[in-house]
Image (cartoon, rainbow, N blue to C red; front, side, top):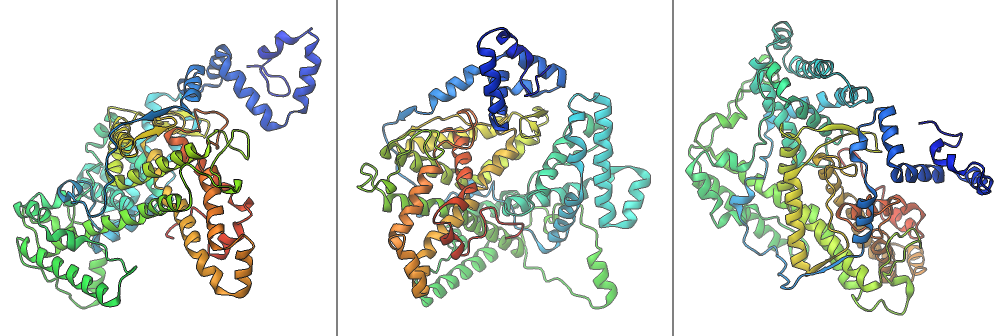
Length: 602
């Protein structure tokens, strides 16, 4: 498409020639900055289908398939202020409710053993240095010949697998390079790749770049043509607690034992005396010991330790067994060590839930403690009301509606994090579904793998329906973006929600440390008093967060941001990006704040 010097399609301005408005329009365009011109061009492309199709054909963009129509944008705009009321509000679950360990065990991954951690380092290092996605997800591959693309995929896949084998065992790697029979090392590849996926689920803050490359690597390996050439399927299921326990009748009995709740409980020290904490620790240890001895099939194994340099070297260079783990070779037998590991894995899940849900629970508590749902109070600075166009807001809500909007959003995030293991399991199934192939497309944020994720969408809609029943209705849009240019695939979906504790955690930590900060020195107390005291400072920060982290900001249209399910997270990240401009930002720094995203291994 031909463009004028300002980047506008010539077809869009041809009709202005010869008119009296031409000079005025041209002058207005000359005064526009780059951002305004970009938005103007986007509007022209969106509203002129012929121009849009011509650009897609000339440049070879497949993103045309994911271009949002004007009707979809109008519907998204109309949904921003929709309101649904559901009668029969259900009670909120509490931690005292009975836990269904049989259902939970199906999604809880097994804690890694010592031997498995050696192979974790192998897969993490392999993916860290790999440039697989740099070679595959490029503009040249969008319309590339199918045979040429398959040849490139096989070259890169085999390079990664060969490098992994050579790093693990040099002699076996040499043999693999000569024979090219990758199927002979099937068990090794499946086990090592499964360990990487399992570790990531248990530790979302780790392997931030490696996991994405790993899943895209596995995604390509699931293509029928690739599997036929490799002669085996690289992907195996993530090893869960249920996978281990179901091999023995005693395993199912363990999950129904009432003492399992005591053995997996998390012991918190807040509000308890030292003696009470010690008593709970002893009760938990006794329950673990009792259950592991009661439900094991064989006695605890004692590993022999041999001295000498040779034996130490052989242990470090030992080959991984062809089964999933060292303990998995016993058929239906469960040793005490395995039962104990299953119990600890279920306990890890309880810790995981508390760490991820607690920031949401604390902010819901702060919302109810500091703000009245109907009365904003006499001071406007503490009102939650927002108005479109004021301070970057793109929604208009009175105080009461914004209070409900924030409460529902926080409740939704909490429920998503509560079901994160289940959602992660379904997201991986969607990513590795060979019947739903992805399409490489330019979504406006680079080339992404756009793929339908039916299982994740259904699970998310179910969670949303449960939240709507729990809170008695819904304010705003209920659209779940997944498989479009906003959230291209299930990997991006999971990545968005595991960010929630990363930006809510520092906020809650700052709010909790303000009283301690005020008591630290006389000068610090004077500084806190300049905001009106501890409680007024806390309320000021909360009011700003509840207003502008939920104001629909983060994009220039209501399809990409707004009150939709995905847009609420977009607005929250937009608030995080502007934290440095807040008048209370020094308070964050004084409490030890360094950033919302942290760093690898924080």
